[in-house]
Image 1 (spheres, rainbow, N blue to C red):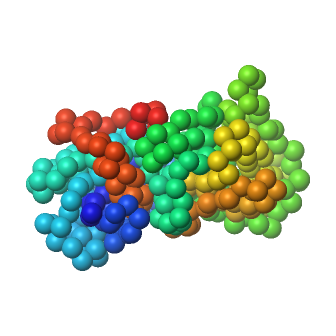
Image 2 (spheres, one colour):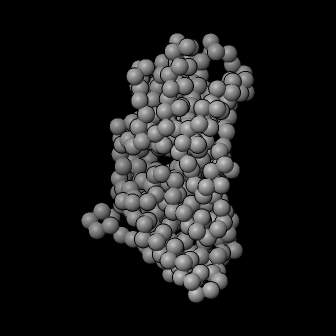
Image 3 (cartoon, rainbow, N blue to C red):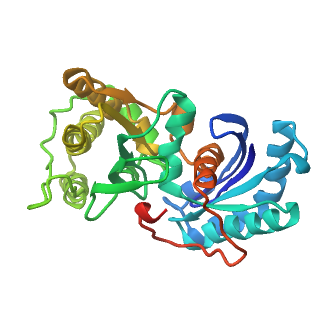
Length: 336
């Protein structure tokens, strides 16, 4: 079964063709990162306009790379939530047109479910149930993946997403946008005990997280140093920040895994590419005996392949959308 998949939730336009949920025939991506870097973050209106400009030609490219004709497309899958509402609408409306024009079913896909599904592409042997730590610029949550389409959030951030904090800290430190990769590279030469940074706890919700205090602490350090004319140890600060984020994420993910007893832990989202988080999870899983599933680095960020993969399982579960499908800025992953 060939699924034509669309992803446009933020600043990457992505179109892919995926066969039977696990085989990626093509995955074409047009990134806007360089343009948004001029503003230090994603400008929603610009993102939407760029999606409009790119999506038709990108679809042609994905179909050509896949080596299939229009008559060989069996369904269309699209990210319909969550994300920047204007950006998501571009993908949804184009996917509706494609579904109607091709005469094939339209399958709505939750963006975070797509990130989780990226692990099925990297690890063909992975099957639910498992616990997945989902960490990106817009989402930080620990998810109980009971089946391919039945999921429950066990814990989540109460404020900022971890990826958003990486971006904002990187901007204040002057090391560019998006912040994840340059912060990771900078941290490799740093002392992770150089700066004492907070690790927040949410009373009464041991699996929930908070990152606003950590972000504020780093911003205050930077501003105070600037006011006093002091030079910050940037590698040490980047390493200390990464350690604080990992110390917040990893123990909670492992506690969730212990409570469920599946013996499998996965990671998903752009922040899943972070070196410190990956190594800490590897160490924790060796100690606990759980199997760890990490997505390929190329599949950590937004892409169409993950939407096509999850779209296959949503299709198999009987999920369909009509021409009245809308886009949503927020949506519970449990509702799909």
